[in-house]
Image 1 (cartoon, rainbow, N blue to C red):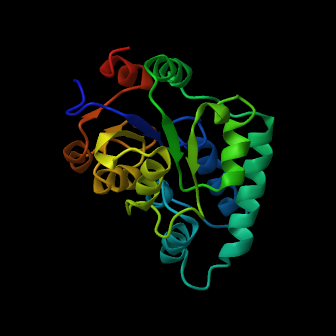
Image 2: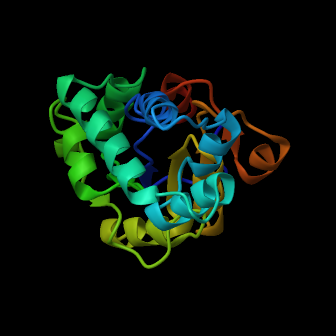
Length: 219
């Protein structure tokens, strides 16, 4: 399938799309939960995927109860996750080839993520991916996080491209909702979350890998 309109820029999510961090976060959060004698069901974790910190906190408290000591729990999870990321995080299949194609095509690109700028630097810096983006939009750069369109609208603004001329690449349901609400041509590349009927309705297509996205763009 080809995009419904000419593509002038590409906006990427980060976790689960560029780097294989969603599975890492899943395992870490379940581990620190078990240390407290509790369980974090997979379905609860998946509802957190793609959300900013406050929204993720609300999901956790809805599951564990309002008396749950959230801050030490999430701090321990992030500490363990960062220790593992420091060892090295895997780049997702097809990322480098797609970026090479976008370079050759002269198409600018941005990252639009719910993670912090520090997390972006830690995840994308060591592999050299960070330098390949003209803009990075992270937590703190917008008022409302995904599933609101704000991260994608800020990314389009920083690239000086109309949102409708941007191709947005996402792996999460909340990310797809955000990109679609921003008016972008949205492609879901599933990671931990499957492409539901709702997701397929919001996307121009669902791609198995970023290689398929490159082929869709003519690479």
